[in-house]
Amino acid sequence: MEQQACLVTGGAGFIGSHLVDFLIQKGCEVIVIDNLITGSESNIAHLKDYEQCSFLLHDVSDPLDIERSIDWIFHLASPASVIDYQQYPEETALANAVGTRNMLMLAKEKNARFLFASTSEVYGDPKEHPQKETYWGNVNPIGIRACYDESKRYGEMMTQLYHRIHSVDTRIIRIFNTYGPRMRKTDGRVISNFINQALYNYPITVYGKGAQTRSFCYVDDLVQGIWDVMNCEALSGEVVNLGNPEEYAVIDVARKVKEMMQSSSDIVYKELPQDDPTIRRPDITKVLNATGWRPKISLDEGLRKTIEYYRETV
Ligand code: NAD
Ligand code: UDP
Image (cartoon, rainbow, N blue to C red; front, top):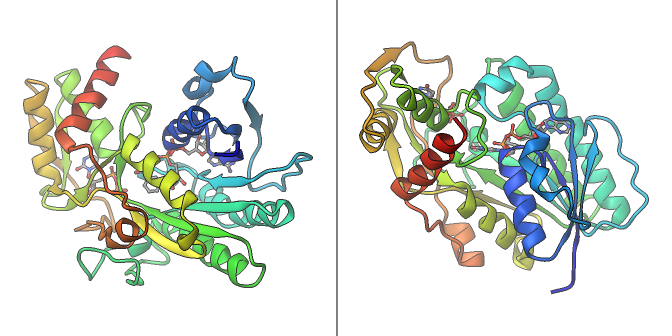
């Protein structure tokens, strides 16, 4: 394969840094763009001596001038955990709205292929289950999650507009809950919370009754999916779900983590956050048919790897 020059926004974050590792392994050249609002240079510190990887501290909500040629843009920059985007609501909205347009303008100028990291949150609290790409969603436009959900929807709209009107070669991925090493311990996501609570034998906090469901994708599977989607000619101008269709109730995840870690933590129940989706599972037929991609790593295997990571970084 010809060596691609890639720009990865949000490349110092959890998913972004794994994507950067993967691209480097594939022989690509990578420019990481990040303002470090929720990411960390430590996630890419192991690449600092690699000539084919460079880092630019930059906020995607500001226009970006780059002299050199770029083949592929992966736009992942945005706070992503519920705690993070509620701490930075305006920054989140701007990264996905203004930031996406800035990156699309760059893609047009460079004649680069563009991928937008959207989210299953565009389906809101879904009335259709599992969620297919054809479902338009059930989102509260003024609720506390709206800074994220609605700006991702806006980002999708702008991406589609640049494809239709400006002929940019785009792809939109709707990422479902993804977990693995390099998730910040304090990012408030369910897997990082449960493992770190169990690690110190602190109470495991289940919100509501824990009957709400999620489908968890291990980060290595997701990154392979991003690669497959970016390489698939037939997916130009398309939107696809990327996630693991194995669905779990949150209470069962709490029990599983407690048991796997042989923790003496109690499971305690806390108030369910506002607008917390009650069910979520991706229908991945579209991406499977187009690329053959499907996740390979079970929740048990992914949890084992993630637990090991947190144990090593205590
Ligand atoms: P993360 O917070 O670890 O990574 C986001 C990165 O983007 C961070 O390094 C942060 O500093 C950077 N960033 C944020 N705003 C920026 C800006 N204005 N300019 C430059 N950099 C900026 O989160 P993540 O889980 O790795 O998420 C990556 C992407 O995937 C996000 O777009 C998120 O919405 C999407 N996504 C993630 C999940 C998931 O389960 N992890 C699910 C759906 C969608
Ligand atoms: N959750 C929980 N306890 C926690 C953190 C999260 O019960 O300590 C629940 C949360 O209410 C949601 C699910 O786990 O139903 C997934 O939450 P997360 O913040 O990881 O992702 P999202 O809500 O964005 O899917």
